[in-house]
Image 1 (cartoon, rainbow, N blue to C red):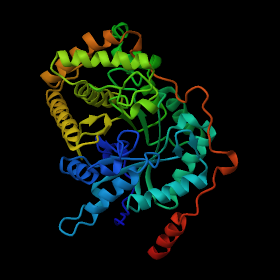
Image 2 (cartoon, rainbow, N blue to C red; image 1 turned 90 degrees about the horizontal axis):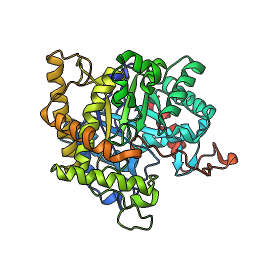
Image 3 (cartoon, rainbow, N blue to C red; image 1 turned 30 degrees about the horizontal axis):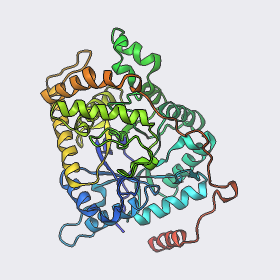
Image 4 (cartoon, rainbow, N blue to C red; image 1 turned 180 degrees about the horizontal axis):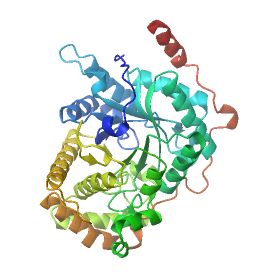
Length: 430
């Protein structure tokens, strides 16, 4: 177990790394056998490349266990142990399976104790209630209160947030939590809503007819980001830049019977959207690019800029005055990791040059020639090619959704030794 620290809670914008490695890919939804992934090497390489944040969830199959094993190996190295405080660990609670959720205080508490054990740590830097659109607002409120109790009374959590897919639901819940508790959320994780295909997290930025209006007026009228800001949310993170595998050169086969990809079975995108995104791959290839490279670069730099401008960004580097929007990236190999980090480093270098030049004029300011090329390809060719599928978001939850967790089972936790082990650890610390 890595040693804990007694440092007081700092502002999230100054402690959250701008780029986090998401480990949802350490899961059978993305790879046939997650245990066969070189997960220890991926985590170690990420840290060597300067990535300091890691995002996981108990819903992601063995992800917490694999990430915890990789970090524990580094924390306990005999030659060069990694200090726990150098790493920012994020996990989630509440989602048990595809259609099974338990937001009761006792389950949330059990889930946190289990995550601490799996991740070999005595505290978690940030915890989200996972996929909040699947339960009632009152369940979300109760769960957030329990996370805050674990933060304030037990010292197990540093920051509290929510995650989910429909951005307007996330904004409504952020507003409700502030109104009901008088305390804003520290963070909101939005996924799949700031991509080449779906820009709904801040679509106002890209609508040509809105460009003629003053920026402040555009934001006041309809920006989800401004709702988050008014609700006091400190940081908004963007995740799933590739639309959970939709925006890749290989894509997702539209035939639901296809055996070519494990994504076919569970990905909620309709066949027509999959076909439209395959056309984007053809446009990328015509420019000598891969769709995933274009999608990653566009989302990294645009969100770095937009998130900072909206006032929901983080320090670009520890102690830096430059703010950037924070991103969670998922990879399943070291080459994918190295490509993403290389793109991020180029983005950061360009933004630093822009900041040094004091470029503050209205509209986009580009940090590099490559970014100009990517933005032109996306705006001039890819967005028109998407047609009606631009900014399409599938329903979440989908039609017919029912929480399979029976009411009588909510709050019932397994007798698997997790709580007993936690009690014993607390007793031994006294």
